[in-house]
Figure: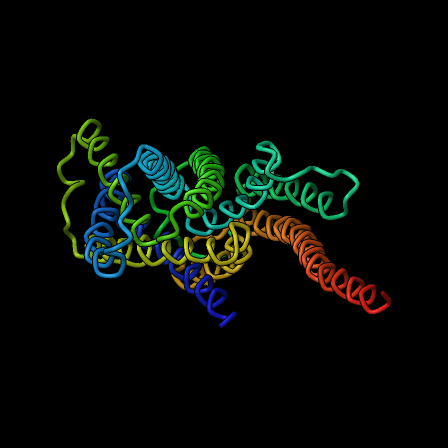
Length: 342
């Protein structure tokens, strides 16, 4: 069933946009990034404990330092990613946040080259496409962040906390940092899944680690007890959605697709998230600015340049594998012909 990973990633993009809207709504009522992330991760942990025990009871990992370091690294990266992402969302909008997160493939390409996981062949057409695409991605993100422009749609109930243009810039920059951390997370997750290919248990340790880090950070920094309250009802509904669909569903689907198709597969579907976020923003009456729209278009162009370059490499690798598979058969045939002649 080759279609299943594609359908799963479409559903994950829907869940991601829904998570951005739900988080924005919850934080507009007084929740902080730490308390929202703590509750969301705690709910995910409670859901994943029985699922992991029931489905993977015999696959529990040994508590070796290698596994603990790997799980803690993913938890720390996830903690930074979620907190910075929510802070960026709080200062900007779901559309801008979803758009700038498309920087992930460009950052992933840069990190892969720096870590020498991939050769940088400057004469290769695919490498040139990925390089240009990465530059276009960065330009689009800077346009969306630094140029707000006039309002073209909406009345902005979700943007009521926005006061100055500097808030918009801060939100965009925080989301850029979040996108960079997300790229590091994707690469690290791929390494961990090779050694321990059980997504549910990996996500259980991941969610538990984030919940602990958020609880410690919140107890140190938070002074307002109201931020821990689960009322009004919209907070509770947003947290339940975030814990189930934002964390458990989305992260497990992402991990499964990385194991099946590789880390670059999941970023192919990110432009769909921008389209969904744009439609959701228009439906909810959120303010849409010229800068966000123009930056989104530039980012999508850069995104497809990067993916086109990667697709060229995939085709080249597949042809190489096919030729290697044919060589033993040809070699055997030549040997058989020699035996007959003898």
